[in-house]
Length: 394
Image 1 (spheres, rainbow, N blue to C red):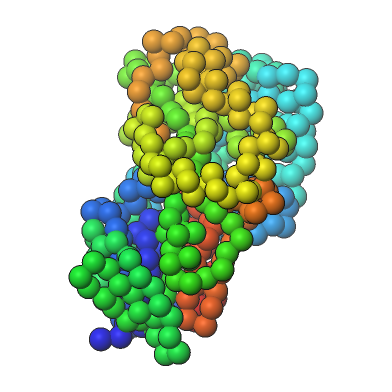
Image 2 (image 1 turned 180 degrees about the vertical axis):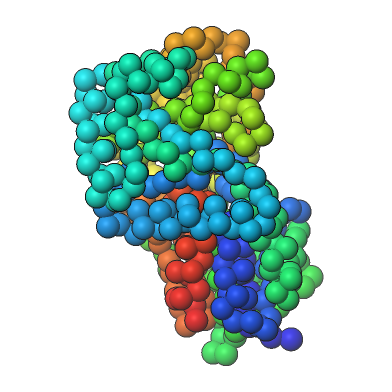
């Protein structure tokens, strides 16, 4: 049998793509291959569960457009499928004169992105969030929270209802494109498909190389380490609390996140991971380390971001340093409040010149499309990202 479509990767982008293909091409044969024993076990299942509004992204950019459309589409999908979500809103808190200036620039950007944002004074901030301290804040009411694992399960049910097949515990070991099909191999089994889409996240560069593609980037894993607050502090905040981002840094910084299960987490930081899929602390995979250590772009990235890299590593190894990042705007937190929580790992695509790739990166041939970079907030934007991928494929 030759399938019309094969999707590799059972994260939210792969699932949304499979769902969209079957909706656009009813009656098509489709198989989705996932190497894990469950869906969404990596980036999708280890993120903060936030439905982002898109306030950070350059006006008119693809990321801004996809995030805005994705937030709306995610909420509609949840409502249609009985998935609980909450539009609790987000506060971006400024704690210094410099951050107040950055906050003003961010407010102007939000207006250009047509996102509803309100300036909050220091007094109003205290009224809204008695446990948070800051000089002022921006309030983004449309930001929400959800379980993306539940979203994945609903998408998988939709795929199967539309006639798609999902195969778990199936690691792809070979990909070969021919004139009329793509041959996909696993241990002891193989398939043929007219079109292949690879949404492999942390393994995306390896899948592209396996398929014989020439790529100029590599995936570098960045660990995002979180802590969970004690249950008696689940009401410490009413909204999501984020710092004003530093434009010179590649990541947002530590924030307080209300989760859909009622708990509150703090984090993440961003440190180089020693394993692409090693979530326990001090996980090491020598093959993963060799991949980026032998790639010249990695060392150029480290050199360009050495100051922040040292700070992040210090705070990862020294819990009081991590706590200080949290206490900038939540001074009541103590060391005993930082309880263990599973880390997340971000698939960061890095170019040979050391530049971090912050935009979408696709590599496409006649019969294959490889999603080599789907940057944050890919979970929020998964449904419109899928629409964009399907447009390219069909």
